[in-house]
Image (cartoon, rainbow over all chains, first blue to last red; front, side, top):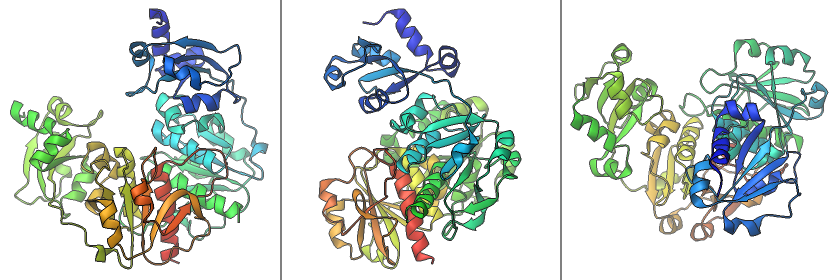
Amino acid sequence: MLSKSQIGFIKSLHQKKYRKENGIFIIEGIKSIIEFIPSAYQVNSIYYLAEFKSLLPNLPPNIKLFEVNHADLDKISTLQSPQGILALVNIPDHLPFEVSGLKNSFSLVLDGIQDPGNLGTIIRTADWFGFKNIICSQNTVEVYNPKTVQATMGSLCRVNVFYEQLPSWLPLVKVPVFGALLEGKSSFELEWGKEGVLILGNEGQGISPEVLKFISHPVTIPRIGKAESLNVAISAGILCSDISRNLNK
Amino acid sequence: MLSKSQIGFIKSLHQKKYRKENGIFIIEGIKSIIEFIPSAYQVNSIYYLAEFKSLLPNLPPNIKLFEVNHADLDKISTLQSPQGILALVNIPDHLPFEVSGLKNSFSLVLDGIQDPGNLGTIIRTADWFGFKNIICSQNTVEVYNPKTVQATMGSLCRVNVFYEQLPSWLPLVKVPVFGALLEGKSSFELEWGKEGVLILGNEGQGISPEVLKFISHPVTIPRIGKAESLNVAISAGILCSDISRNLNK
């Protein structure tokens, strides 16, 4: 059984304020935990129902283990249907992103994404297509939000997510700056080339005016039917696939 | 103000059982409501905060109007942040889908999609690319689930969603049957042709064995990185874009 203070501490990490204060976030589910253990992230402690113990790999000795009962897991979990195992992971000290890292590759730039599920799904999609870096505006939802972490399905441990002041960061970028807009060159015809960043905007407002002016290559996914817009994670998926097709042809 | 019984009735429609029993579902937000009014759906009644009245178009006389206060709207809304206006819409009597409607077009077939947000996002994406028909297995999440309706962003009124027993329906299909699988022909190279259905499977289990055997053209979105899978709505978006590029070249 966990102590009241342990439960209280883990529950506090459901909130951004306490994640930031303690430098710790929560991951859930055996698949994610197995992916995080050998990654660059440092897993701090693991809380598991008895039946999950045998599923854990050999663990480094610095990871603290706590067997918990269903009632305690329900309390500390961020999920409506807890997945039997949960871990606390240290938030890494992010070094500022070096723009030289953009050369000879594609990276995503997110300007004000608000929905944690969208951010998580974009990270998962970036990982599928082998994009290593995502640069977020400061007002993009926090990457350690439990809904974001869950939606990444473990991909968070393989994709670097940075937060930057985009209006002062974008002028440093020396590769083509693509932006997903409602008016631009058709994604069915665009030549992506071999390097660049692709900017995707906020769910309701799109890309902000301060960021818009840095776009050298506006791109549009052609609309054949009548929907007013596409979900931003869907747009990201379609354009990542197109970029990837071009890089791998 | 609404009566207790009106509030109770609308709240009951948050649940599938009562939506089915009464043949009514809920839509929210001025944009969706404006799109549904002239559509084939019959809007039954509208509940709005005073400031939304001027935003409503000329309405057919059979739509009942109720001005409500914030407290009542909070009670009847399915959203955490109600959008100021909500409508009840009649669930249409769906005729069984005619397979002849598949000729010279592409349609989506969903096998056991469970997440209402995924279903809604797929409907929105289908509408963007002009796909008219989606055929769902009987165990796919209900299309009138409030989270599904919300995620369609109004596109539900332009895309026909049918529920069929796929193992008895698929043998009737006379167009190529594509299926999104982890092993198949690369979507970067596939020739889609001018007609077909594309099957997408459950979030965790993929396409069920009873449905798998009807796939004549397995297709895979090439994985360059390390994510174990793509979100099903992302896969749908990427493949709809590829189909659409081919149809419109």
